[in-house]
Length: 325
Image (cartoon, rainbow, N blue to C red; front, side, top):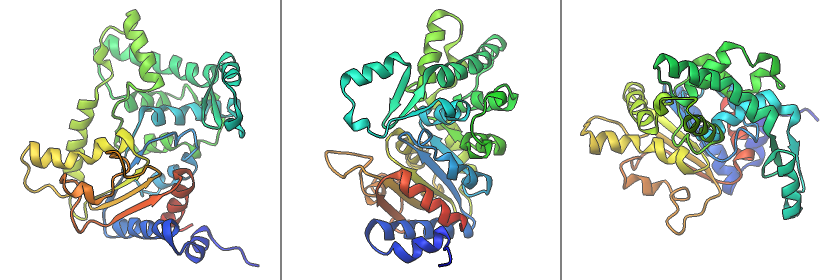
């Protein structure tokens, strides 16, 4: 039998329920771009450790993503994987681990994320040494940069190239760096490198705690970007997971309108969320898109999609459809 493309397979088999919502969302994404719109993608969870870069990097290179908002964990874990992939340990039977098993992983300096363990020395400490140089250089020069800008500087310096353990084309942060993609990383201090940065401020190795710029400054930067990029067909919002990666950027529209009094700011012009969070107990991550209308984030006629499933399965399939693969 002749092999079909991923897109053909999906269109033939994905006809109902969440699978149909996947197809609709992919079609909406393509229609938005075809009409001249831009797309912001948000990354929550452990998407980088799940190696979403295998599909997201190509989306970035081919101009299907125009900005990213991610957690500090996703920002750093793509680079961890880039330099230490061969040292990661996968534990497919992680559900069977006992507390004693977990202590053994700790003793081996393996930090577990579901079925995957990140090696401390080869990943975390290697990146710490590289980025600490950049932090201290900026500190001595009295300069300040955003968290993602420091990692862009590390990647552009070439100091990590000898340690690459995956094909660089599969690193989404490298692709973003090459495009100088706008990036927003709210709550960066809630990350491994954020903790490490705090430790170096405490020891005095970094004198100015503001050498790494803050989340408030990220919101100001996001507001500037949104106002300059929302002309024409506007900006779509493709949300993977929930949490601060999604909550932070979607608020820029009501902030501009309601707090700054900007009268001509458009709503987000497309919305899709991949999530397994349920609509209950005040969960914002699980809230249906219509709730966002009441907050001035989406309009009644904004195309809206929700896919209740595992993002590690759904996102690469949507990206394949958007890329025509």
